[in-house]
Length: 335
Image 1 (cartoon, rainbow, N blue to C red):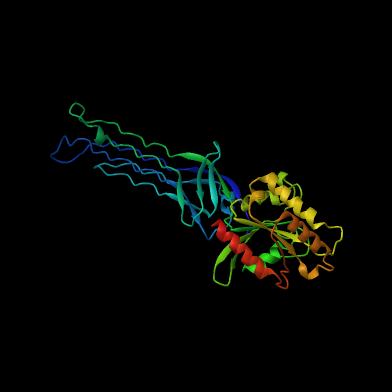
Image 2: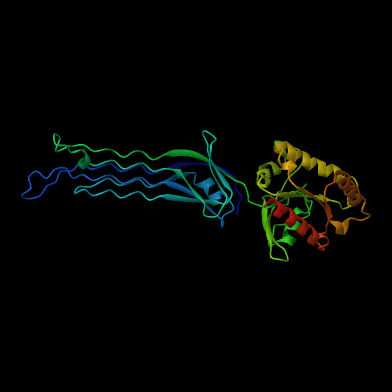
């Protein structure tokens, strides 16, 4: 399934039905008077959060959404049928904005939470409402009022407790596959991950937290380079960041400290608040760290900066349990 996290859609609530013009006709009652009924109200457009969705893809191909209009009133004081509401389902974590004003209409952060995005029109009054002692046979009725029409922006920000960040091929997908039931595609080349992956990590005492793997971060990501700029919004809600850095010695030209600082700078340039989140630094690929020059270099740097540092191998499981325990502790602080 394609991952779509930002779309613009048009919604139109139903128009109210027209009121009826009718005069009562019955044998032996020559002057029965007006009996036109009211029109039905137009249906609302309702947007509802659903936990079984994780993409806004449907709206990319169906950007126009219209609720049913109300029916016209009838004679004998019959009320027109109300139009059916239109319910649109979006993933939990979707922000709804008015595309023209930028106003945030709702932030749907819980399963089942909903908002009326466009209100249906009111049904018009039938001519029975307008009879007076001096105007006993009114031959007019109200039209229904039009339903609201809006252009909306839907923006999905995944609800995760922990955000995994780092350069491509730092081991984020491998860690999320080992620590949770998520099974992302993994290969030995950059940009393996093209969309954010979500996984739920369960600890020994059955406590759990949600992890998001943010792909494609490289230098210049905040201004559009690589893939990460499309997905950085998904870590804005997280409680803690785990910054994964490759400490293997397969390439002596790679400087883990420089790699770490590059990504931290990109986070700060995208949103200064990201760089202020609780942070754990994770040296990865311990199983192929060779003489451990890169590992020791990063460990010394973190010690000098007073940053919590963990060294792990997602392949062998070394250090993973300790890392998860530390992440859970930070998540519970945030909660």
